[in-house]
Every structure is written in C-alpha cells, then in structure tokens.
Length: 443
Ligand code: PLP
Image (cartoon, rainbow, N blue to C red; front, side, top):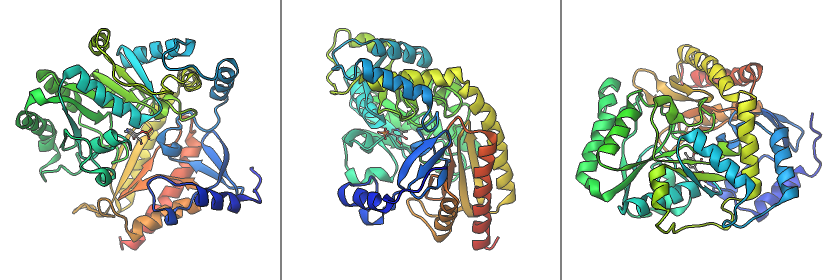
C-alpha cells in the first residue's frame, strides 16, 4: 500500500496555480495527485490505490511501470540520450523494420504523438497526390494540433473552425443510430454508398485521402460491419484516393491485433500510430507509409521535420514495449479476456434498463446509456452531460476506479495486462453505478 503524502494538497494547489490543464475550464479541474503505479493500478497522494479502467488516456497498454520497458529506457539513456533527426541510429533501424513488419507497409516517419502523426500524414498525402482535400468522419478525433484538430469531426474541432481548408466530412458506420434514421441493415449499404456520392460531388481529382480511425475510439467504439473496410478500400482505389488509417487509439493490441483494420483483412496506404506504440512510457508517434509513397520520396523532397523525430529514448521504449506484447502474449490475452468482457457487457445490457447498446472488441469497449431502450433517447445529449451521467461517474470515482465517460457513454479500456479478477472487480463497481442510474430514471 502506498503511504499518504503530507504535501499532497500543496502539490495539487501548485499544479493548478502554475500549470494549465488540457480540455478544461481551469477553475473546474480537480486533478488526482498521482504518485506511482504497478500493472493495472496507480496510487494517489492520499494513499489510495486506483484500478485504472481507462489505461490513462487509453494508451498505457502494458500497464503501469512495466520493468522491461523501464530497463530499456534506462539502458538507452546511459548509452545515448539524444541524436538529431538526420542521424542513423540502432534503435531507428530496429523500430522502422519492426513497424514495416507489423503493418505490412514500408517506411516510418517518427513524431512525438498522435496529433503530429496525423498532421504529417495529411501533409504527406497532399504532397504525394498533389491533391488538397481530405475526407474524414463526423464522429472522429484525430488530435489537437491545427490540422489534426480541424480534421476531427467531434465538437473538439469547433474552437478552431474554420480550421485548415479542404476537410470534407462523411457519416460514420454507427450501426446503433444510423444517421438517416433507417435500419442498421440499410445503413450497412448506405454508410459506403453515400461516401461515393460525396466523392463524386467533391470531384475525385481534388481528394488526396480519406482519414479514418481504424475503430473510432473516443466517439464510442464504433465497430463497423464486416463489409465496411473491404468496400471502402475498393471505393478509394477506384478513385486513387489514399486510405489513412489512424490507429493511435485502436492499434497496438487494444483490439487484440496490431491494427484494428487487420480484423477486416485490408491494408491501408498510410497508418498513423502513437499511444500503444510505447504504452505512453515515452512520447512517440509514427506515420508508416506504403512502398509507393516511400518510393515517391526517394526523388521528391519531404517537406517536414521535427527536432525530436526519432528520439532514441522514445524508440528504445517502443522496441521494448512491442517485445512485451509478443513475449507475454498480450494480444492473445486481450482477445480471450475481451470475449469474456463482451459477454459480461451483454449481460449488463439485459439486466439494466439504462444500457442501450454495448460495443466491444478486445479490451476496447463502451456502454451506451439511454433513458429508454425503445426510443434510444440518450442519457445525456451529444456534447453534454446530465445528472444521471454525473452520478454514474461520481460513484465509480468514489470507489477508486478510474474510468472514461463522455456524453452518454462509459468506456472499459483497462491495460492489456489486466487479470480476470481485476476486470471483475471494476465491472462490479460499474454494475453498482448502473443500478443507481436505473433508480434515477425510474426503471
Ligand atoms: N488519433 C486518435 C484516434 C486519438 O484517439 C488521439 C488521442 O486521443 C489522437 C489521434 C491524438 O493523439 P495525441 O494526443 O498523442 O496527440
């Protein structure tokens, strides 16, 4: 058990006094003073142990303080802490080769995170095709730099609008709520056919790429029908439009595979990744491009760079982290435990009136909450909250389970190293919270 820290209130006060917290009105921030962690748990300054049911920002895939990743970081710091981006290094060769192997693509450009990866993928697609427009989806998040934030579809883009020019948005494979109000089976066809119409109306020769999250994460784990990706791949090929697969959240084991799109048997032209690439132990993102794009830049100028592109300590952390996935069979574990989690969530849907839909693949899961299963009225409005959602989140927090909830949704995304017993403990707390919501809605 961690010891309580006598200075914890002061640490929190100084964090709030001297630093800005992201995505918040500063007065409303209530940070937890994190002091350490191990596996699926982290500790706070009051001596509490929290079950991390969100892997921090759905990135800490190997869990807190994995010894093998820590050792690799320490060894790299001792041997060579930094090399500029124009130097060849051992770790750059090793990680580049590994990423080519696991994605089926050719070459990597390294960034510091997911936003920068998408920013550079958009730029590379424009340079390579000579076209300007990028198709994205409404229920998406691609990052918080200017380009990636404007490419996003969810409300986080609103503050930077009109953003970068040339972003065109289409609807999502959101099968629980088909956007045109039709049935899920009608939308299975429509979610692709309307994209073709948009392409024709925009002019195929003006569109460089379509940027999609492999499986949409922070807008509700939107699992597409099996036909979606093969049809999308064929459609984009028809018009010579690149497919950029943003695997920042859904990649690197979260769904039990290297890339979520590998569940559907397609290969994108460009993959962007971050989060699970290092499990957050060091900042790192990558844009991985196919052979044709790599060949193009053999004799064309790559107009972009970052002082910390290919930072050796980040690359060493990634190499060790990917080895942990393989040596500890974490993807197999994720698929197996994911099946169990899916069954548990389905049982909750049957048991609680407020659970309208569950979507789950690997350890990437969401409960979508409603006031009424028949009308599907959301428990909180889009981009809003409600007393019921506030109660649900407060109850879970009071039990020291760290969970991600947003609008009318509650996620289950624990570290991939979580055990069945730990998963059960967190789900028991979720069940208590769902029972409270059912009481509030009078079910
Ligand atoms: N893309 C997706 C799908 C994400 O979920 C995120 C972050 O949550 C990003 C991009 C941005 O990554 P980062 O926060 O590392 O810049």
